[in-house]
Length: 147
Image 1 (cartoon, rainbow, N blue to C red):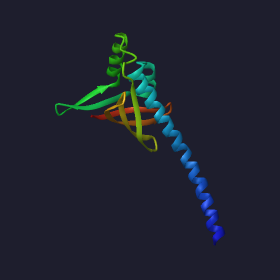
Image 2: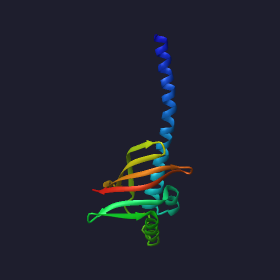
Image 3: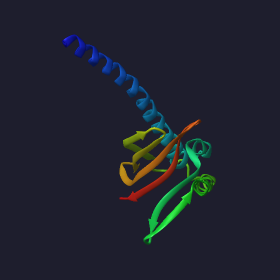
């Protein structure tokens, strides 16, 4: 009986390792997309090619202003970034940093909680929705709250 229990335990360890590796790979890929496309592309560098690689073309930023839902498509956010870059506002005086305390993945869908910091100040908490496509993980939606 102890021998069977030992074999079952070893099989569980092996199988658990097989499932953990893809999850860790996905988490690393999601973190890389967020930091490259969002932090660097939109906030610190103004590189719209990085933005286009990491954001789905149908991405929407959802917010609330005067108790009404606001919607900002990625195409508009890219135009704003290009205008800021043309005005010489990159790199910003206070760089944006991001902490990712939560990445939750189920199949081809994921959610990431992002602490958006300007310098050391926590300015926003973002919730990003991501989907896995043939080309990799893409940010498809954002909601947020200000601090």
